[in-house]
Length: 234
Length: 281
Image (cartoon, rainbow over all chains, first blue to last red):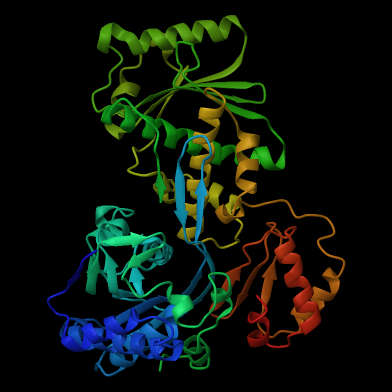
């Protein structure tokens, strides 16, 4: 097991990543949520000049990340003049279909709900707490990319499994995958079952206090609730 | 993303298999509506042991014979006119049996279609259709084929499917195709493939609406009708809803206990605004 940090990863960020992998008795869901929010803010802080080049950005996240990591990102983006950010939030299931005779399998993340703000965009910013198989990220990009046709597709995850970038990219033809730009703070190279080690300390929905894989999809983020009330993004 | 663990003889075979598999799946998707709505029996056989044998599709009384060539240089005359001889022989056999049949040559490049059409042997002119089917890098790319979109739009569990739903559908059909090939020695029954997909609702294949979904169905619909802005649809065997910028498809089909429990939750809670409805999903 080894972890590699990106050259842009500050000591502050390393501290936040270390907090994520502390056991649950020391790292309550409330503390974990705060750490995720801070990592989102740190991403914007680290890449602000690059983000300031964009005018119309669609932030894409899952419902479990929306109020924490994505909200941290969004808060930072609001301080960038001239940048208009809209939101797409997806509720994904995780399912594997296996062919009994062929040994063939499909790793799927079907979308069961979505919240999507309308409008044209220049770029996607996909925010995900961790990229392992890349299935959720791939699914959510595929859902929108052919209709909205952004010129850039930024993908931010605090932690990524080695090979995760390729897993996301290889599902797309080069005219799409050439637009990908991956941003991460730490890269791990090992998995224990479903979990990257040390990763983000387990399944994010459990660590955030959103319940099991099934229960987490009943959670409607406050971010979505707030933005429904405002015709234009806040 | 589909991963195929079948053993093949090498890269060329793998490429050829993928071309043939994707074409077969495309045909399956194109005729699935007939199979679902009209009960038309469709079966597909690879390497059918006849002169034109890459794929034989039986559709009711019709027989369609396909030769599939993902080949940049294919001509009628190559290998001592092998291609021509195969079609001439197949034509003779079909006519001798007085079959209701079609002969089809499918290539992967437009220039091969143009050349083969221009130089078609006199004996086959008007008797063989020459079509183009692209060589795809991965089965999920079937979802982006313009010729398939109207068929997928009908087959989807959603009235307004995004690319994710269409990709799940084509990947499901791809696995169903591979499964049938291996299990039945090369002959696939489309009805069984559709049933295989219906057993796996995550692939979101449209289903027939069950009769008498739930004893409290009328009450359920009355409650939903009071929620401002909420629209819902059940005509594809799933419960799909839209409310402003929010939308969703309940993953359990209408006849699944999981969905029936949702009906009961809605009837019991009688939500009157969307925010009260969404917590019950």
